Length: 220
Image (tube, rainbow, N blue to C red; front, top):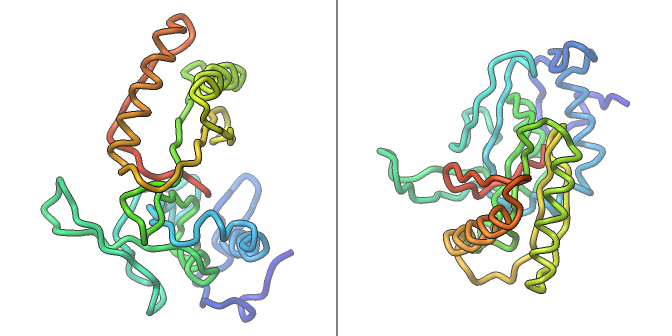
């Protein structure tokens, strides 16, 4: 059910802009979706540092990632400045999640997916989860599922609890809850060693690839 623009905590610009042409879903449809399910989403975005994936003209338009809080966010939007290591800019002001107003304001700016950090803003850079991203080159979900089982077996042998979550149309994320303590770099090094061993144990099924350090996970 569409929610009336006047009932929202933000002013929606171009509410009838179509974000999904094939289905005809509009910006207001997405606003209404987030409004209804935000109570369930809140625990996963509360105090999380956000990286935005913005598609201002919808899924068929140009999309880009943005870390700095964009212009047009409501006054008082919570942010946290994080020092940059490899950038001419001293720091980046990341949006911090946790409120419906912030979430809807991001959607209003064409943010279709939100990528959240593994650590809370107040505890950065110490994550409370580790995420292993499984993305099969075959495009077959069954291959992702088999790889995830190998990952779970390895984690079980280490006495680590893990949970799987679907990612996109074909992938899986395997999450491992962590006690806050190790830094993101330390967790990343552990994950690299772990998946290297898993790939070596199953060379006909698995390969490993490490792009730039990934500290965020999509919830959109």
